[in-house]
Amino acid sequence: MMKWMIMKKAIQFLMVATLVAPLLAGGTSAMAQDGVTVTINAAAKAQPDGQFTATVDVTNVADFDAGMFDVQYDESVLQLDGVTAGRIGSTEIPVDAWNKIDAGTYRIIVNVPGVPGISGSGSLATLDFHVDGAAGGSSAIDLSNGFLNNNLSEEITATWTGDLVKVREKTDGQAPHTIALLVAVILGAVLAGLAGYFWLRRRRVQKA
Figure (cartoon, helix red, strand yellow):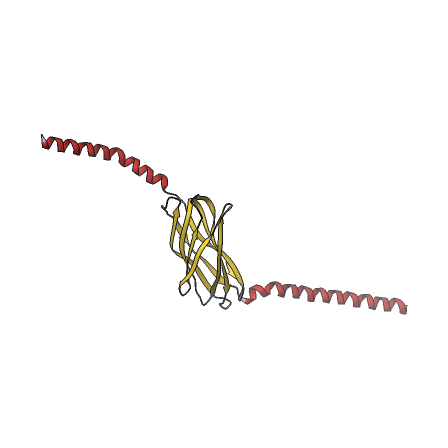
């Protein structure tokens, strides 16, 4: 009798587990977010000794609440001057902290006040850089140790991608000025030639 009771309970347990398993799997699938990406969006080229901004963009996020990530770059080429709030739709994403944790590496923490959960695409933060490197140099701006949470404190799985910034060759910035100068010289020569022509013609008319 005892053995039969144990077997009966085991059968009941298996039946319940069989029914609940698909529901749990379905629940997990419903919470997963497909296609969430976090990327660095920076200009392809920056001027020597110049400044530029890069955004940490996020796409297709749902119920976002907080996040943390490391930004890495080559300190011999770039320097990070500041980190300011991002924006998803009409909601600002405040920066709670940005701290240097290693050479060329800053850890950034963003957090939306309260627990509303923000959905959509936009940016998590704006990065202000200045260029220290010489013309012709370059630096990757990478993301690592990224982690996003939703408003239920569940992880949002995302793909994290960096970017590359090149420091312009000096000729890149000088080319338009060189062309403008060349056009001005040619135009000046043409005008001078016309002025000389009309002056000689007038002299001939006066002599005649």
